[in-house]
Image (cartoon, rainbow, N blue to C red; front, side, top):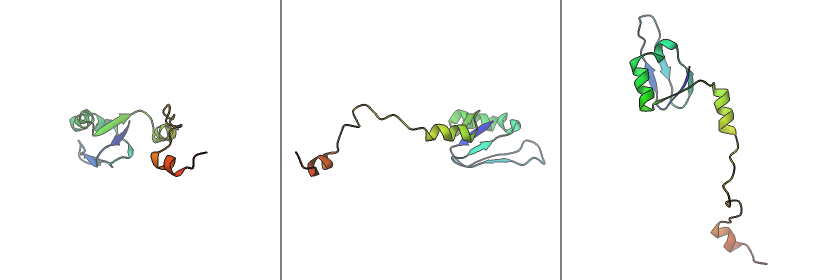
Length: 89
């Protein structure tokens, strides 16, 4: 399972000898199943501090790089400063 953390978070291990899971702010991370089943993890998801996704960073980055369509009418508008500086014909 992949997650994006909105804050730096450390999920403590439930068993001795298992390393805790460190999640860094605004980065993707793979989370082991045992961490996803903890109450702390579930509360973080519920509070919106963790965003859970089934996609890897590659798919999300491709979606983020996708060009947006311009709003209707915005391409024809000229800023007021540019309209005053442009000579009329």
